[in-house]
Length: 279
Image 1 (cartoon, helix red, strand yellow):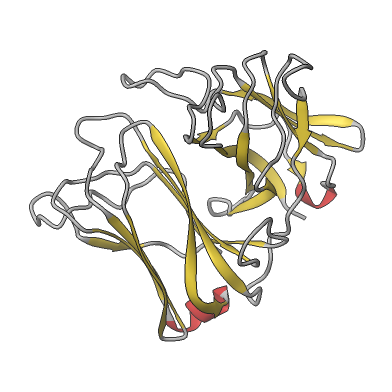
Image 2 (cartoon, helix red, strand yellow):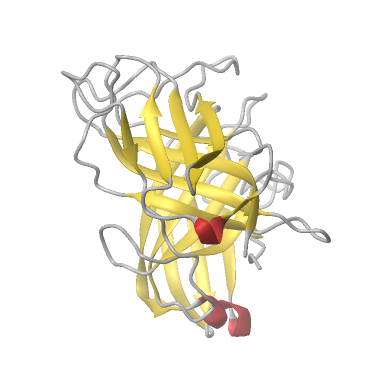
């Protein structure tokens, strides 16, 4: 049993005309007829760090919600337990959605796991029935095991508001497993403040979390001198090369970054840092 005591929502809006919305996003988790979690997410932020609801066309969001009043058992989730809706009639076209939970722990900080996920969504959400559906189900995904075959990686990043925390430098994610470089992916993007990013990354060949534990590591690097201070980083291993995964393995979860600044300029930060491997 995994008792979930914290919930995050990640989403990516389709990059097409009118896909954006300025409404809040409502997440409900229902188990055996009881709403065990209910929260309205903003996901959007303005440039002075104040929360504004909504996501722009092609924009990603990543936000921690309020904790549930009582931790709920993730093992009791079904494909109809989690629903995502829109609090208004400004229709939204989501592309991908993931719900992340933190498992309660009495001794150490709890581990994070994907609870539900939808990809390549073909529907719109809106309180106006002529524009879309009010809510949609987000089907459950398994947490996998150390031996789950990973065929693709999902990288979620959020940069917070602060002085010069954003960067225009490219970054790179590397994963070594069983002594071999399985992923070496450069990501070209402006990592602006108060912005989230959703990136699927191809692997050289399938591997497992156990392969990383035995002889491997995960490194996040920056490829320029424009220093960067991310806020949140999640790295997930997916069991499918494309489409919706059935198993999502948490490889690294950093809800609050404490690994310092990144920069190829030594006085400004480190060019690369190892990411902690999730339990």
